[in-house]
Amino acid sequence: EECLVVVLNLTPVPRFEYRLGVPVEGFYRELLNTDAACYGGSNLGNLGGVWAEAVPSHGRPYSIRLLLPPLGVLFLKPEKP
Image (tube, rainbow, N blue to C red; front, side, top):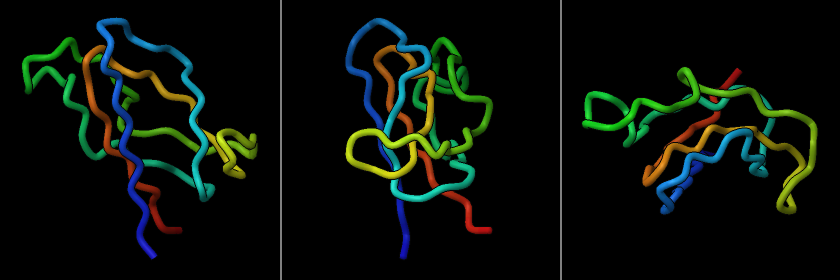
């Protein structure tokens, strides 16, 4: 079963330490960050990915803390062990 997390920040303000509920534990690789410098953005991101924590949020058993770039979209995918 595949899982893809898509997060949009449609405000001009970056969101630091934004906690988002996710369905599975493990490492979430940042597949796409539309704010990357190669797309002309400010290059704010999550250094390639983040680890899920056993902290429930948004009705999910795990959560990740993200830096949401301004006016950007993130695509994250959990890596299989």
